[in-house]
Image (tube, rainbow, N blue to C red; front, side, top):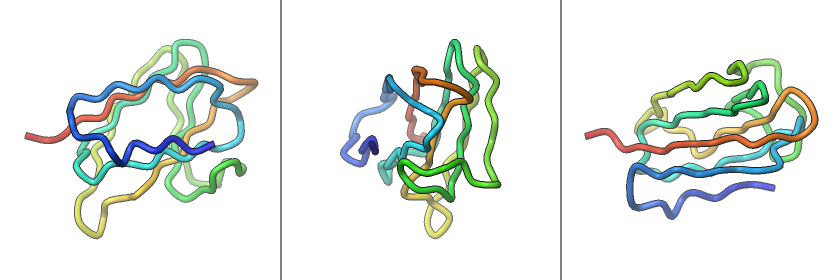
Length: 103
């Protein structure tokens, strides 16, 4: 089930997402966000741009090892994605996000 963060107006904005599974979960991004960080203490996290909510992991994705965080710049204008997709390597897990705006 998608997580809609488009209404976010204050930064930094932390978000804990429980029950992330091997099926991709859509994260709808606010247009004002410029950075997003991902972290899971116990699961490997996969981040993709071209997926569907509840679908399979696509061929192109970024892998974040368990216990490690990763900060990603978010493009602007025509390069700004409206959504990103996350999943974990097995079972279900918790993924922590941190949205930031660029000053």
